[in-house]
Length: 156
Image 1 (cartoon, rainbow, N blue to C red):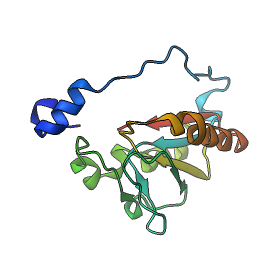
Image 2: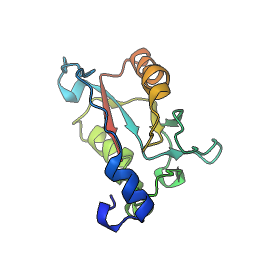
Image 3: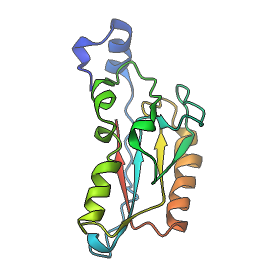
Image 4: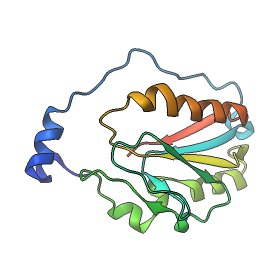
């Protein structure tokens, strides 16, 4: 994450006066199973995509499906925000999409299983209406259809 005082003056101005939206409700659902019996999916806002998928555009509210079988090094980073410091994820994708760490948790029996697919969104969306009304609910329904018990979100 970049420090506000180190950002370009235009970005600094934008970030300083950006209206933060607050929501009074949360889609949080209490866990009904022990974690070692749960099916888990990962969701990131790092803008990762596969080489055969289209990269994200700025303010892109779409998502990319990431198969559980992917080698994390094959992911491309398409995050467009000037305020997003990619140096860490260039070294280790797991900082923003911890699939390898979750594979370890699965093999250790700490989680039940990983879903066959995960999802990536673009972060830093300044016009999130489509994300809130369309694409995030689509992904939620896909995860529900897959029988996912826990969605682990890594926002960037």
